[in-house]
Image (cartoon, rainbow, N blue to C red; front, side, top):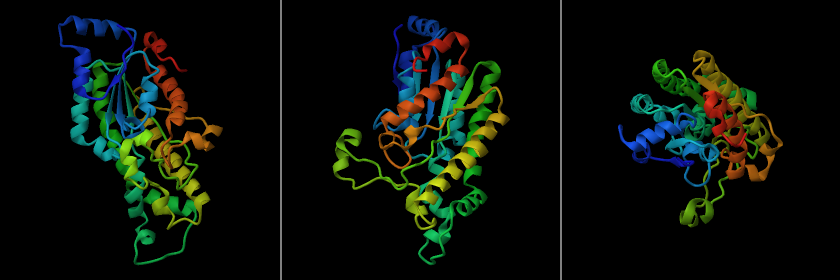
Length: 304
């Protein structure tokens, strides 16, 4: 069997796998003895169809079978609802996945959800004094935003821990976000990256600065607030804490600091890298993914 690309529907996945007892299924299972089967499940960092996002940049450098599912803009509580966790958990249990990759949480912390946390500033009834990043993060930390994100991830991991009892090599990978540098940057809307609808839309985003410009002193404080929220809060307080709770199942990708994070060409908008940025991140992502695989399948990951 030659290298296979990813699919984006369970119908296509079933067509690739073939029915039980068929020659196609036997060929697939023989192929998977030395190549991985990977499920990518997440929001826009995985599921946007506009360009090669993180999941697609990862999958295109792996010789194996992959499926990418999810919804751009979705919150973790929706992607990982009880119903979805049971549905996808059953599929992981029945199909020979080696790794499940999760991407969610950023949307929970942005846009109208963030505005609700700071309703005292974003509402029209009052105009309190602006504050610095640390004071804003303390307010955010006392909200229940990250609590709900953790609960959503916990649902997935608890279900996949059950699957792991019968498939000990199963692993789950989550990723943090990289520091936001161009606070307030809108998405670049061109016919090349979103099609002809670009002619009808004025702008998309920003998702962080739109609510926080009423709260914080300046954009520098916006960058620091984003760092605290996404690193101290989401990465350390949610993902890394869950890795300690689910040892041997859940691993968190590390994105080392890089000068590329401050490059205009790295970013598509305030919170989404472009293809070049995602290609950069995919190398670190795939390094973690390769180590999560059985040794006999690691050579299938090619962009390390």
